[in-house]
Image 1: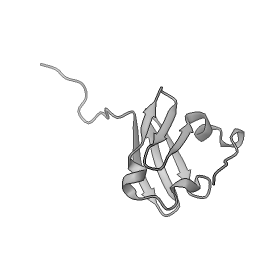
Image 2: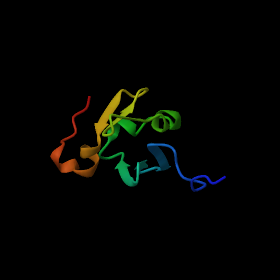
Image 3: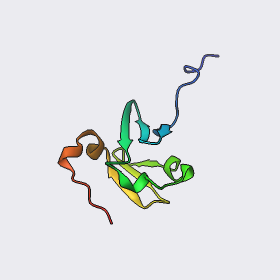
Image 4: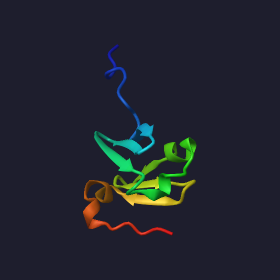
Length: 86
């Protein structure tokens, strides 16, 4: 019996690292860095809140506990999406 490569990720989205400046997010095969300076909604979030991220419709990221929604385009082209938050 033959199976696929061991260790391959079955997740569509995964937080790969968190530090005091921001966190890294792996979406399918592309990694993004979200600095707290540019994405302030995550600055005071708990570890569990940041880790609870879902990829919806292939291009929409959702953090339910934080009520944060981001498109992948806003991560790859942030200059085209001015951030507005309260």
